[in-house]
Picture 1 (cartoon, helix red, strand yellow):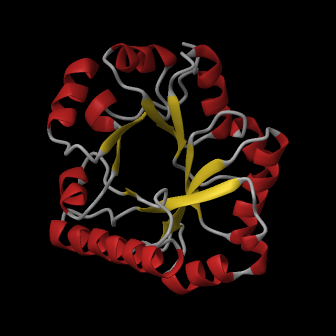
Picture 2 (cartoon, rainbow, N blue to C red):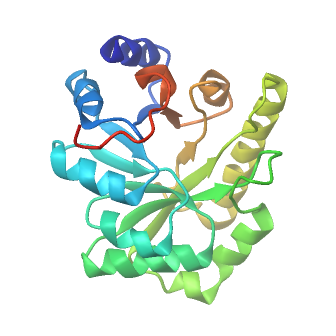
Length: 227
């Protein structure tokens, strides 16, 4: 089932869009099934769970951290994480930079923007992002690299609203590209779209879609990662 689901989704993706299999709460055996089907990008939202799964799975997996990241947990993923999607403050970026430097790495990061109507979601607005990128503190960071933006649309069945929110994120990306990253080929990622709305996200310019339940089924809680 997992292999079939992955293939069905990949058939819908343009060449410039990559699929992140959101494997949070899923047992390692399900990740192995996805891996055997050719999937190499996996997304987790708990640092300790990601660390434990990384230790049990093949080295060529590209691990994406997609949840709200606590500064005291960065150390667990800093040695191997490929991309952190959820940078929403200068303080968090500085903390990632500090841990990356300990491992002689440059960790790629996305700035997370609040594009939804729900106040419970995390993220910057455009003015806050400008302040971050213009700050002397940001200019001093040597072990992180901003490569794009991330946003989560409102949890609604109104796809017109979802489309507007994704379009807003693409506008934010374009603005930052022009103002801060015009010379950076690395600044190209737009992480938006999940199981219920990724086709709309692709139409609005997504380059990374984060799909969980459409691959693995409904979430499972309390399952040991080494099950």
